[in-house]
Image (cartoon, rainbow, N blue to C red; front, side, top):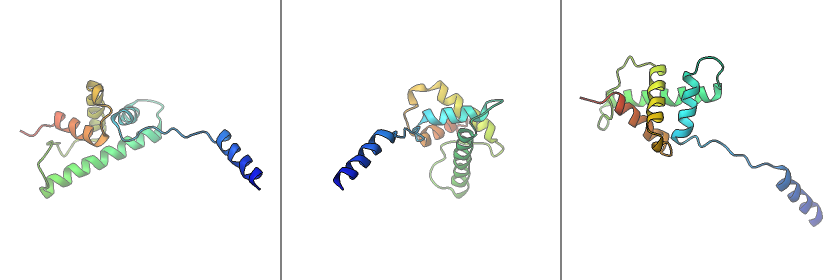
Length: 120
């Protein structure tokens, strides 16, 4: 029985390749995903969908916080801003600030919003 368990463990270690996933919590992944979203032609729809979903929820949070008066406004995004515009703004911000890419995506999105639409 020990021999059988040993063989199974050996095979498990040898044949199971460790899964290396992209770090979806940093600016690197968000930059790549949003670059796919704004790209013309063939796209990686999984990454595009990630970007659009992530930014759509960030926009909704921004609107909710503004309308509910929760906390200080970090940006004054116009209500008519589209997901494509927001995606382009985030990609540009991330490309202009590569040193910030290791930071959490959430922080970087708010920084991009604040830079693009500062409250006056």
